[in-house]
Length: 246
Image (cartoon, rainbow, N blue to C red; front, side, top):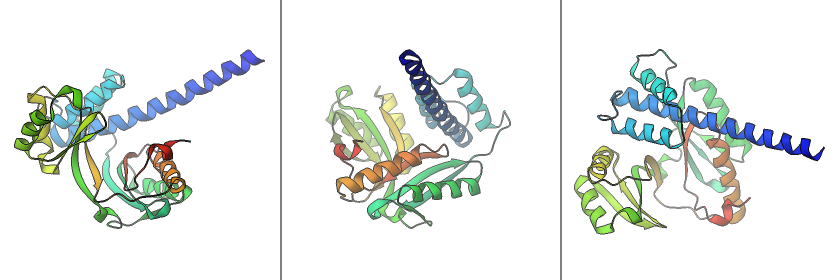
């Protein structure tokens, strides 16, 4: 019986891992579709698409899936029409939450995301309810071991960078949205590969919360992030490692 139970546990764990993997592939496919639709299907000319493809390859997404997503984005293959949306809301303790959404059914997604907020002790707000607390910025995370701060400063300032700071073992560059492509191209020309390069909602100021509220916020973020139509979740709560613990 012990062996049988162990096998069932392994099978259940693998099933969960496979489900998570499939959901992650689905999100990446949508990201590729949007990138290809906005800038064309050539990753040499479309840096956003190239980055999306790199992210997909990093998690061993099958080549056929990537190519199919590109063709859907460019219209070579028929597929669902994806819509980009931004949802805003409030988390536990009055924290501010913003979700980047990609959906083929606005009404369905609206209702389901609203339920997710409520399930975790938050509530969804209307447009503009919390967005004024954030700035939309390009954010590049670069391993500090790959370059010097002075060299990176020269590269990103010329390309329109706004800020450069140390964060743990990384150098973090922020910029206006309009400078994102120029900085991405400048980093590539210099042979510097970012660990991540994203458009993010950066809080204008961080909200301090206690451990109990912080853990509730983490739970809300996890629940939202697990939903297929949610691409990214941003929050202004200052989350500490202690709050991330189960």
